[in-house]
Image 1 (tube, rainbow, N blue to C red):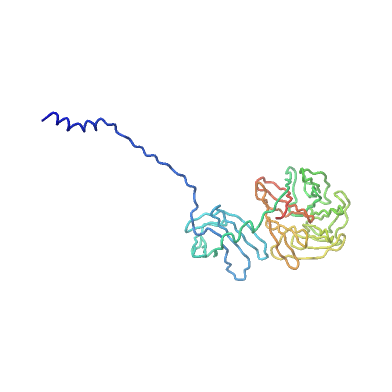
Image 2 (image 1 turned 120 degrees about the vertical axis):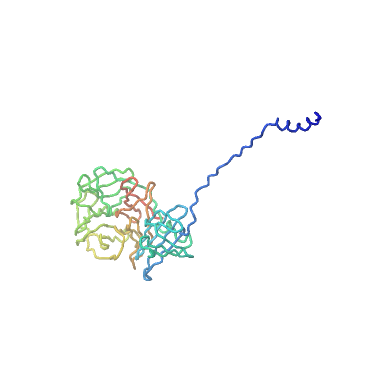
Length: 366
């Protein structure tokens, strides 16, 4: 074979054999997407369909997809409100909210039917969808604003948590028990210090009120039947505030304009009268009602219901004007049945579950 022709034929092989192989690397980029709550049909705002047509109470469930919480907003038959929160979990067949067990459910159009999780086929609740934003927890029960907080020292003290106390400017007249002895204290709310004290007349807790215009401290034992008493300042001698005996008084208050004195009992009875005179029944509650009722102003009263503050009127009929909850900077403040007002300032007592302590709060109503 011609050697020149053989060289020409092999030349391409030499060229290819002398080339370096090229390596291509492919890099994969991972994109982390935020978790998205599945779009199950139970999310949204729902109103409970009452099974009894005569039942006028209202209940709503806000199943909030963004927060994963259920806000249960309900009313009693007398208009008093509740607001409670729970977590939500579920899928396209089961749902759990309002601290209940997992339950089967169906959604058809604007109606959701929740079945009893333990008894197949038994309907637990029927709900109808309400446009989002129609009812909100913030409007259902707004927050009180608090402008001062005084935490009660625990060492040696026990507290009166279900009767009224007195307001004297930056001071409060309160009834505590220290190492077994019941005392009336004057508490400085600017520094949380007790500035003065005197032993209570008897070994008992008392309902109290301070009438600043005459430097009178009204008080009465809150258990049993007694004449209500009054004294000048903290140390004065006692005289009768009421000429008749009243039983189980938990709150005393006054109308600063008219001078009328109000006394309310633990069983929903409001008495009215004048200083040193006979007190007669003004109003009697039935069903659910606020506790520790005190006169506020403009023929309106304040009381505590289920840990919330209620502003209401009793004439011509009982009517809720507004209901408020307390939220401090650390935790929800569940109100005790112990409040005070002088017609301008409002003080409440609340338990703080994050610090396991009781505090007095000076609040304003939005």
